[in-house]
Length: 510
Image 1 (tube, rainbow, N blue to C red):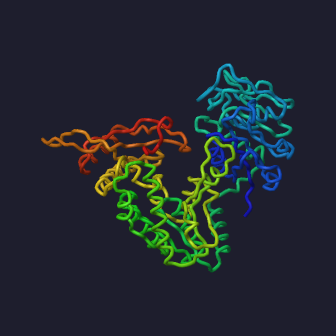
Image 2: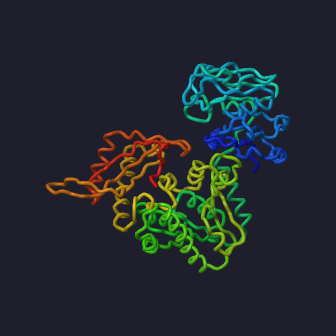
């Protein structure tokens, strides 16, 4: 099924993936492409609307990112956000200048009459993030919003259906933002809203079945959400033609390996080979404290273990990878401020004898992967597991890793997650986990002096994981967690809660 499409032209801003997610949340399929995408490719994609994102550049600087001017000649509605609005102004004959007073954060704004602001509260707040603003609007455009320090908070050319907003409608800090995006999609672009996860899953399974035929498929399972959903989707399409190799490095959370094996073996009757390789991984990690060295060792060892098992199967026709849409975007994002090269299962394609890679999730954002998992019948406990780094608990133990430390952290982390869930906070806090620090301190238990580990608890709220605020967990919940851990888990006598945001810190400690 061919979905109606909105294109998001990426100019490198930090909220750009969030824009695309908001469009999909509104029931319209969208793709992010670099601003350098040729006009011929844009025409071939036949979008019903185009959104210019924000970006770190300034339109007045030399070599500022500009897209093709022919976009405005296609007769397709355009919405420019932040840098995108300034770009429209510059390309349509307006001017942009440095503001006397820059605006960052939550700002009051007055909205004028515009189809883009239909049903919106006219005096509201929005999220601004700019030093420059539109000074003189282009011919044919009208000003439609103003803030205290931004004389042109939004503008439009109704005849050509070109719109611009200096603020960010995609973030939660702009209360009317969802309505604005909905208005652009449905009232301006004429979207019907045909993007539904149930349809996507059904269509993808059908395509995989047709592609694979009667050939063999191999999937490397890490136990994470992405690889689990990818495996079930392939299994629904080809059944026992799929073999899953689950490399259990022993660095998963408490009971997680058993849970994965039970769900996929019993509920889905999948062909699953579980390789219990904890000793092998711990032997390689012995005495290693540097987090980057830990990551490298775990990645290399994962490939070795997988390769050894895969060779027993002989040649396979297809290799499954759990690549998701942010990986695709970040691997080819042009001049984005941060560019990453992603290989979901790094190095495996070079070691396995196969003909082609299947990436069933490459069009989905993380939250959509979870929706797909629920559509496929995967239990909520598996689908809604906390985000987990590839190296697992190895980078949540500060310093060297031992089997004893691993068991201490597993037990403490289990209690933390159990109590957060019991308090009904599991969906409100976007990520929460425990870190076993390398610090020991004096404590008293009974009449005895102790000298044991300090455990750090971390909880954050975020929409995009690029920025995050520390979660305000109620004191009574923290108290219960702390009491349980020091009473039930050996070798911990002090609990601290991390109250730093990202930035300046990261979400993970290592």
